[in-house]
Every structure is written in structure tokens, then in C-alpha cells.
Image 1 (cartoon, each protein chain N blue to C red):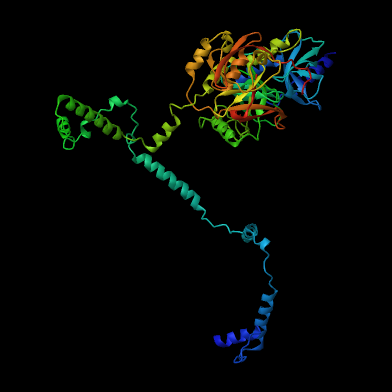
Image 2 (tube, each protein chain N blue to C red; image 1 turned 60 degrees about the horizontal axis):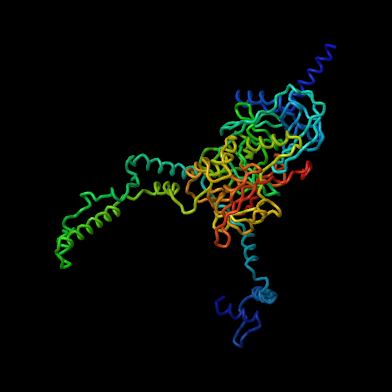
Length: 349
Length: 256
């Protein structure tokens, strides 16, 4: 019996160490990894190798993972202590591409849920991957993101991290306090413009001002012999909204929407309505394609990003006032903020 | 064989012998000229379509330009020389030599005594007398004109910044016509990331402290080339994450 327990312990220990090929770079990262490890499940690929991560959001066994962390489902995930958990999809948020998964026969009620940071400071972070902790840097560059194909706006934080030869999609950005600062939603494509890569290269090495956002898989950066991966993370504000929605009875996330698509016109800063969603709040209020948005709630709109940020921060049910220029005539339209269409649980995965 | 004899042989070889031509060379030379004639006849005209610059380029490239041999010490010497010149410049240039731009307002740019030349500057009453009006008001106007001209002299004599200073100032241009939203976005997003009640604190009405603070923090820089991160449906094969690209905001349609 004793030998059986010892063998089991050895097996569990071996499993727990099998996927953590990466070691913490310093004490701070080690403590951050230790803090989040109990709340993290390692998701396998088809061959059973570690591929992605999911994090626990409550004591009932609800996990959240980015869709790029999933290869197949339902699946058997491995907690960092080696215990197994069966996960199946329950919900999906199309805008953030986060998936809600539920554990069958959950016995880990004592496990702590992942704590989401309130206001992470730019600086060194630990990026938790399926292979273990990776050094990263949370920059102060906050980006206006647009998710394809829905074209919906999403605020993103830029994260620079060591380039690795294993998957990092859906990796968790952990601040020095062991709290979740973001979920890696995307990485800058290697085919991005060379100019952008150079901007980030300068930014990463501190050799120049760099771009406001910059970024790229620029090689030979500040993390040693390996290159630099520039990723974009969904920030705490968005994550809080998603977790809150996932934990409702319907497991649906409510992102605000007024049903407009807009772009900058030839002036470079004026925002013109491109399309209006039929039967959407804006359409019902009388907003039309071709209208130029001058102000929102009295705040002068000086670019599409500003309008996107303002609209994203409202809650469904709020009323906003658009001041628009239509054929040289200034008019105002009151629009009730609605909800983006609910995402089917298995849409576009 | 003289030139005349050679020409005569060529004429014979080409079938153009004249009555006075007599073969003076040997048969071998005659056969060579005849072979040359046959070769020339076999040459066909180059078709027009083949007279292309591409063919010419290919032909030139086929010749291969031989790499120039550069002495092994040349790059080292070039770099060392450049470094020495730069070092010498900084070593021999006093710290105060670089003139700083004068940012003082015009009112403070009163001409110093060194800029005034009494011999060239007429007195106000002299100016007034040239107009034929010697009244006190005319003298006062002349004084005013002189003051303005002195200011102009001071402005023209303002030390011009050196090239390096000019470049730095060019980067830090204070004003542009098109306002930028980058600072506003960053600020509002900072509140967003931190979960602070930035824009969410905005009432459905007008204004709000967050909007005010955003407005006061707005910088005046051109923002028309700002980048937007577009997250595409595809997956990066290297990282397994969704692919993103930075796109000029002019090329992006936002949804919300």
C-alpha cells in the first residue's frame, strides 16, 4: 500500500513537472507562478502534450480559456499538481474569443479562483504558458484593437515576451502580485510591416521612442538569444466583464453596442458612419450612413478610437447623445445602448 | 605585304577584284579572307523583336562583374577613422559652443547695444524731417518705427540653432493643426485596464470629470497615421495564437 502511494505520488509529481519545461527567471516570477498555479489547468493537444491554459473563475469548477488554447473538446485537463479534470464547453464570447468550460464532478472547491488585477502597472510580468512561466514585459502601450471578422472594437494591452518554440496562444499575463493582468489574445504577425517591427525593436531595447504601439516578432531583442514576441492581451476590464457574464445563469456576456460601423474620413480625424445595423439602436434613433459624428455626450470626437473607447465603456441600458453633421446640418440623436448579439457557444471555433 | 596589296587581296577574296589587282599574298591568307567573307554572309539580321533591353541586361549579367578586391584593413580603417573624427570633434569643441535656440518672446528681444550702429541709425527727428513733417506726432511715429525696426534687427540676429538642435526641435514640434487622440485613448484605456471608473463614470449626460481630464491631457500631434491592431481569424503557426497586424486607422472600419 505504501509503495502504491509512493508510486502514485511519484507519478503525480512527474506529471506536474513534465510540462513545466520553463523555469521562473527570478524570485518574483517564481512567486507569481506559485500563486496562480493552483488555479490553472493545462489543456492538451491531440497527442496529449501541453498546449494551452485555462484558469479557474469560481469554486464550482468553471474555467475560462482563450479559444486559441483549445485543440479539441471535451478534454481532460491536468492541474498543475497533476490531478485530472474533465472540461466541457458551456459558453463562448465571440468578441473576446474566450470560452467558458465546466468541470465534471468537480472536487476542487478548495482551489482559489484566479484573481484579476485591478490596475496592473506596466513593467515586468510573468506570462504563464502550458510549458511554464516565461518572462514578459507589460508595456504602457494600450492599443485600439479590432476583432475580425466582426470588426468590433476591443481595447488591448501590449505584452512583449520571450519568443518560444511552443504555443503561447491564450497565455495568461500575471503581474508581480500573482494576479491576472491579461489573457494573450493575439500576437503580432511576422508579416507585419517592417516599419512596425523596427518601432517595437527600438521600443523593446530602449533605443528610441518607438511607435505608440509598435511590436513584432522582431528578432534579437532584449530577452537574450531568443527573439521577442509581441502579443496583445485582453485587459482586466474586459476580463471582469466576461467573467461576470459567464457566471450568470445564461453564461452570456453583454458587451455594449449601438449598432454602427464607422471609419475615419479623408481628413484623417473626422469619424463618419459607414454602416448601421438594421434594427439596431442607432438605426432606430435615426443615425444614417454618411453621418459625421461630431461629439458623443458632449465630448468632441477627434478620431474613431476615441469614439470606440467611449462606446465600449458604456453599459447596456445607458443613453448616449450623438451630435452629428448630416449634409452640413448639425443634429443630435439619442441612442439607447444595447447589447451585442449573443454568441453561439460554438461559433467560429 | 603593303596595305595596298592587302586591300587588293581582300577585294579578290570578296569577289570585287579590279583589273589592276594582282595577287601578291600567299594562298593561306586568301583562304582566310574568303572564310571571313563566308562567315559574314552567314550572319543573319537580328530580328527586331530580339533587340530588347532584357536580352542586353541578361548578356551583361552573364558576364558577371568581378568582385573588387578590398584590402582587409579597409573596413577597419574606415570605422576607426570615422570614430577618430567624431571623437576629435567632441574633444575640441567646447561645451558652450553649440548655440541654444532663443525661445524668449518677441517682447524680450530688445536690441542690445552691440546691434545698434549710431552712425547708420537716423534720429527720429531726422526721419520726420525727411517727410517734411516736423510736428511732435510725426516724431513720435518715427520713434515707433525705429523701435519696430530694432526689434526686427534683434529677431534677425537671433542665434540660429545648430543642425543637431534643429533636428531635436523638429521632433518636438509643439503645435499641429490636427489634434491627436492618442493621449486621450491612452488615458481612457488606462482607466479601462485598471478597472477605474474612467469613462464608465460618465453619466449619460454631458461631460464628466474623466472627459475633462481627457480633454486637458490631449496632445496636439498628428494622429492620422495612428495604428490599430487588427486581430485576424487566422492562427500564427509559430505561437498558436491569433494573428494580429498593425494597420493604419484610415484602413479600418470600427464596429460598436
